[in-house]
Length: 330
Ligand SMILES: [Zn+2]
Image (cartoon, rainbow, N blue to C red; front, side, top):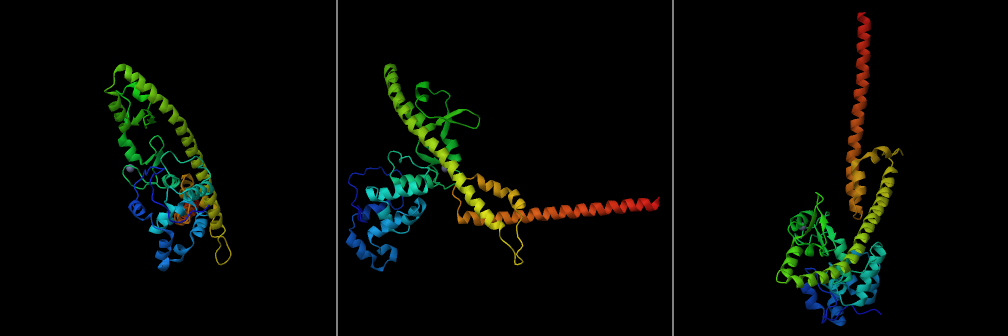
């Protein structure tokens, strides 16, 4: 059953809003609008906004998660439609889009995240702490956050002087020196919890916390495994597209019909081997940038080879001259 594009305001949110969103205030104030008022509002709006709700939803079902996110940001109306976390239809659209376009992401969203929030979390490179968007941000499932390397470093501490009862219930990471490090705020929180407890209470507390930790650990492992598979798959997909683009480039010819590019030279370019290593999707824009780099490197390589060849020919010529001169003297 397709629900209407207008959705009732949430009285009992099923999912917590775990992210700050510039449109949240807009959503809360306008979700009570009815379909008829929505249609009245659309009289002067572009054609996509005037589509019947069912058609709009049908279109959305064929969009990738990235496109859905972009669409939800184009105007308040689409935002309200696509960000209605309580609508099963809307949740299904995001889920289906994820399954179709991100087949390596099969696990359900973590507790507290809606389908849209989950997709956004997976796709956006925004650091939870500094708010900067960076390709180097990584997901830390034990915190359900994305974080950049700089912020991570300032928030981790080593386990020195921390009681083992606390360490056994927290997830650790390894720093560059191979030392176990923990999230500082998690350590501080647990110290605060344990401080007022008696020795017996501490033991009981430790047992309960350890049970919770073990339960979370299972999910954490599954998510980390999925992350690894996703990275492998994304890299594979990326390489496939790059190779296709490279083949297209190699098949380019000049007006005489002769090939412009020599494969061996292009394949030697460091920008190409570097491009293979990233996990992020390879877009038309990525190819435009990579091609510019390849052309530059390719020409530099040719120039270097030509000057080497000239040096070699000159060297040969000069040594011939030298030997002729010495023969003449003799
Ligand atoms: Zn950061």
